[in-house]
Image (cartoon, rainbow, N blue to C red; front, top):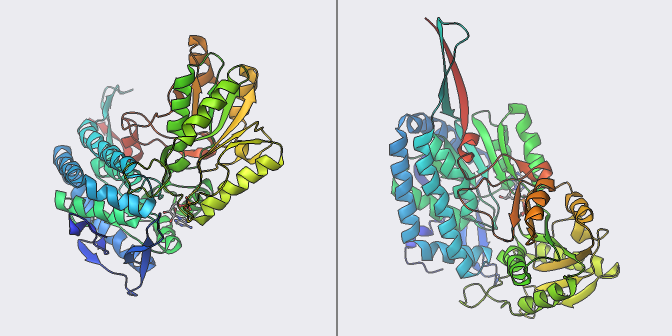
Amino acid sequence: MKLNNADLLPEKNPIDGAWVVADSGQRLTVKNAATGAAIAGVPLLGQAETQRAIAAAEVAQRAWKRRSAAERAQVLHRWVRLIEENREDLASLMTAEGGKPLAEARGEVGYAASFITWFAEEAKRIDGALLQPVNPTQRYIVSKQPVGVCAAITPWNFPAAMITRKAAPALAAGCAIIVKPAEQTPLTALALAKLGEEAGLPPGVLQVLTGDAQAIGGELCRNPTVRKLSFTGSTETGRLLMAQCAPTIKKLSLELGGNAPVIVFDDADLQLAVSGIMASKFRNSGQTCVCANRIYVQRGIYPALADALVNAVQALKVGNGMEEKVTQGPLIDQRAVEKVEQHIRDALEKGATLLTGGQRHPLGGNFFTPTVIGNVNQAMRFAREETFGPVAPLIPFDTDEEVVGYANDTEFGLAAYLFTRDARRQWLIPEALEYGMVGVNTGLISNEVAPFGGIKQSGLGREGSRFGIDDYLELKYICIAL
Ligand code: ADP
């Protein structure tokens, strides 16, 4: 693969200040999501290299935390500048390994950088408190200290942003962080680490380990030196990692699955609802944890919304994300395509109606035709499980109470959306929804200023925002007797 800056394809791992290959010499092949062709190889690391990285992080963190917040911020700001200068290369890497259209990949570079800028500034606002003593001869100080060595395990759907959303607050707080990116998208992670090094991050402060997820992840979870794990991925893997972290009582941040409902009321602005659904449902071909998974439509607006949505979906352009006009790239792999097919088959067998799409795309490979299904109901898999693909299932409903019940009837609680012009509904429905984030008259809610995260089995903790750095800090209380 050709990049403007060849340094951004190191095919080695940054451990303890050196770029290294696996002890075994083995490599993992990274494939182009659209064509299946091999792009590059990355080291297949295991437990031994992970242990070395943890030891290096422990030493590096002691020095990093002693730097002033302003100095740490300066390095982070330099990292942002380098990321922006290399935007095209980073976007090409993401499109090649993850499949998302180039325009979305460029957008992700900016989104990823926004977390670094935000937390570089937040570093300067990590302050404590002086409490009123119960005894006049005592003084109570509360300070905030970095958690220490942190680990991040990240998914393939946002190969850059899921790393910076964890690494930026960790580094800003004075922690060291070890990142294990998804096996499908390690190239973006290595390129980011290369730019971090160039920006002046000291050796061992940001390390990236590619390879055997179970061996690397197992060590990161079990090693007592690692004080915190931040994970974004499936609820199933999150549960396993949480259990593996239990013996060492690690702090945890978990961003897990979602099953986002969209509710369109009769009084909604139809065009706004359609564009919001399109943005939420079809971004990254439906492969984000905040993507609309089930769309509840009140009966009065149902026929018009279904027609308008079908038109919008038929206008999408499926293809290799490297082609500028493409809006829908491939799914990540065959397993993803099969899951989409199973959910569609399940709904059609139970009486739903196919409105458009419904099958694999003629391009073959991992491509799937954008789909709309009508007359879906709560008994179908669309209502229960995350589909993670380009399928919009429409579920008719009658009353507010009924739809809130449907929306909350899930173990997930990440994002929900509603479209209504009614001011009472704009207040009351979000309050009744058991979700960490609610979008009202919009399908795009995520940014660096707002706290991202879920409740119930969608996770623990919040990322981004002024609250996000707390996950990388510990409170220390000092009582001074005078
Ligand atoms: P997906 O099904 O989307 O691939 P996962 O939750 O399995 O979602 O993957 C998210 C991240 O978790 C990836 O980096 C993957 O390598 C990692 N992962 C998966 N299984 C394990 C495991 N047993 N231990 C550590 N990391 C894991």
